[in-house]
Length: 198
Image (cartoon, rainbow, N blue to C red; front, side):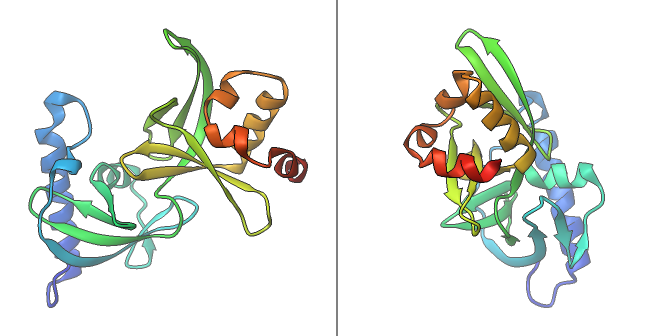
């Protein structure tokens, strides 16, 4: 893949082919590839970066094909605070500026569990905000909150400012699911953050 002396274009092509193979092998299960079960040898770092706005770059150039970004997102794994693209036979490191995903759409729903918020990520995964996928808040440089939604394993989506503003509106209106979505919501210094959001 990105071994010393190897052409990085061949590395990306090889990674793409391996990711497609993994996706096709798992097509019967209709789920994501089981990257949590794969522990291949580390093959070095690839010049790939996920910017804080969710844009994926390869060798400094944005990856303009959403289907390719989606494919790579399915083989993303985080170990010991570092991000990797993993196939059954190889693992390469990539850089992630903030969170690997963005939450870009939010809907209110009801199901057997009651009221529910569901979020769509920038790679078209839908995640229900529930006990297995909670939100957490970090304080941004300006002192305001930055909300994150747990997507899977140790991977998170940063909630966009637009969605956070809608979320606050629903919270102010008393929609009960908003608070249930996050334990940290209840414990946070929410009044200070709420004032900054206006």
